[in-house]
Image (cartoon, rainbow, N blue to C red; front, side, top):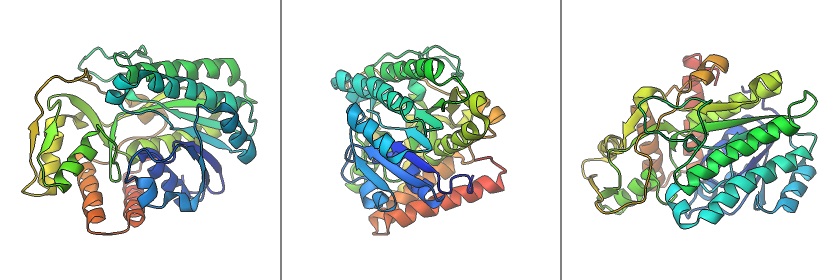
Length: 358
């Protein structure tokens, strides 16, 4: 992977977000010329700001709903690869702001693909959606890439619709060998250091623990496919490389979820998180009426393991330990960029030791 990214022009939408900031720093270490296009960071503090992510890249302020501005940015910088990550990414927020969610995640995706269609230099597009794009039937096995799209809440609906937009553009405009190639990537619940978003389990834990308050959990029995943020990002990078080298054979939807044993109830995950944090950390169930959220959700990533050579390399204990370590080092005043880069380097070392294509 290392040599492939040297001097590649990579355009990332949503580079100021949690996943976008980790990806931007990782690509910088690989020698890529990174161009970001996003709104201001979605939280204060944010990983983008505290880790000075923008210092090593071209960071553009822009809204993916502003099509003329977006198209102008793509045509000015003529990227080789586009990784579309900009989104309204919170389920509970989508209940309160459904039009914003639907507009950003559906029309925004269409805008990115339309702008790419008029930028012939682009050879590869990775559209990041979500595991929640699938019609959730609350069954016991993981969803495969050929399962129906769906969505109970506005967020899930928007991600299912975004997948349909991607499929339509792929078949209508990007199916010939002379054009770029498009793939979509669907990951589970990612965790890691530097996330301060609202209504996400790890940031909620960190805020409570830092204030020496008990953590309040809405759905302790809900099962989620937990994974460290670097695991799906490695999948996105590998998929981009495969698309570049193999073209149409990889232009499809791909799941990048954890192994089945990592599908833990929220309560179990928080139990381990608290033990790693220290003896004073504790949590309790937040009783009361809550908006609908899926109870059981898992991904089947056997396609990525077989056809890409990608697989998770971190167990849940390592995933949670890395996350807790990041925040503890941050709160004692260590450099957030140095912490992040050290964890990226350690992850790459683990991948090589495991013979992972990532």
